Image (tube, rainbow, N blue to C red; front, side, top):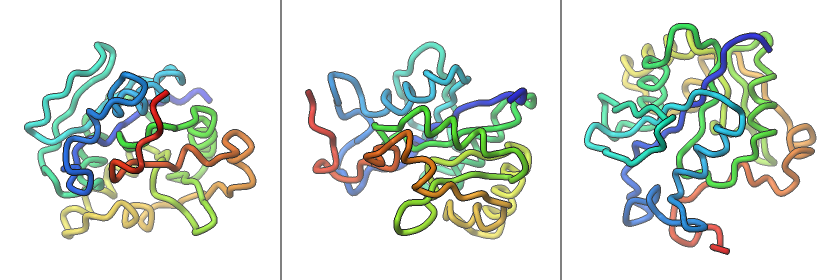
Amino acid sequence: MTERLAGLVLAGGRSSRFGRDKLAEPIGGRPLLDHAIDALRTMGVEITVVTAPDGGRALPSDVRLVHDPRPFEGPLAGVAAGLGSLDPAVDRVIVVAGDMPTLVPAVLARLAAALDCPDAAVLADDDGPRPLPMAVRKTVAAAAAVRLLDRGERRLRALLAELDVVVIPPSAWRVDDPDAATLRDVDAPADLPLNG
């Protein structure tokens, strides 16, 4: 793969179901958000975290922070803000949620590698395709996200409906992640992995 790859972490939600800032919750002595960042870091990509306009987060020095100009309007707005902020030389982007603490880098690499022809790649589980994590071609996905937002759309699945998407079946990606840890996210305190 010769095209330039970047990582985008969506971190602009309100954590309303969690009851407090879930991305600051400690897991293994470190904030939940750091675990998603680490999964991308192992791939050697530039990382950008997208947060709300007032979201002042302490981030590692090698991670860029971008403020979403459309606060709390959903993940599609965060994706649009993040993609629009990236260097023009970036071709492919892996998009993850900040509340996904058990992402498996080999699965993320599989998503990026699947972008030979399509505009996007996602994973499927037994219930069908999941919107996150995803890999997208930056230019086409950014344009589609802005069009959708201008039409009042806020759902991330709407972006996938606008793009040519390859869906990676469980039989392929679970070779690298037998427990499907990559798809776990944290919505409520009970979803937190046990600290050990």
